[in-house]
Image 1 (cartoon, one colour):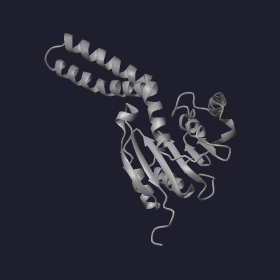
Image 2 (tube, helix red, strand yellow):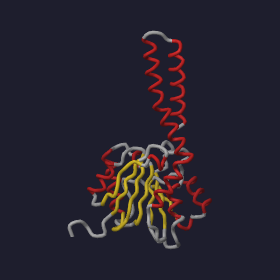
Image 3 (cartoon, helix red, strand yellow):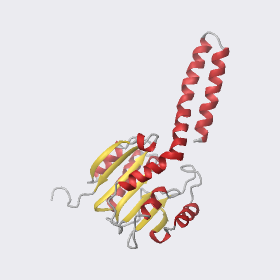
Image 4 (cartoon, one colour):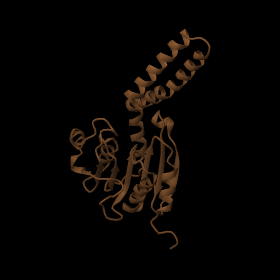
Length: 232
């Protein structure tokens, strides 16, 4: 975010200065530089607004879509510092558990570490309902049909290969219980995830933008595993 803001602001300043001083073709070049600088600047501002306001709105929206009983088994993929994980854990009773997994890459999220997450879990008082693991979404260790709810926010796009993103979606479908629900939020359109879920046998309820919720770029796919396999 800070790099985007810095790049955008620097390019805008240089372009504006060149525009004021230049003549002829350099004026056109200055205009192009100003226009190009607006892209990282707007993205950086969008991420700033999301971090200050939007992320809590997104958490509340996603958690609010689940009809919680209190005994659910929940998986949060790419849990980071625990935004969704802690939100889900607060909806659980003694028989419920929220499991957070991540590969803890700082390039994906600043200060992204298992220790930082454990600290946040303790501060929120939900440690009795939480399990934390280092694990890759493409190769989940859990048995089939382990979770009632699977959540993920701004994670799967970090897997560079489209084929491996589809593999992560197949793994989500595999560990989801019949009747279970998955919600995946992303910076980018989620239609490819939706198609991967359909291919894995899930029923896709929606795959659409949620700009007004996030106050930033965001799409979300909402899918369920049928209780009765298709064709039976």
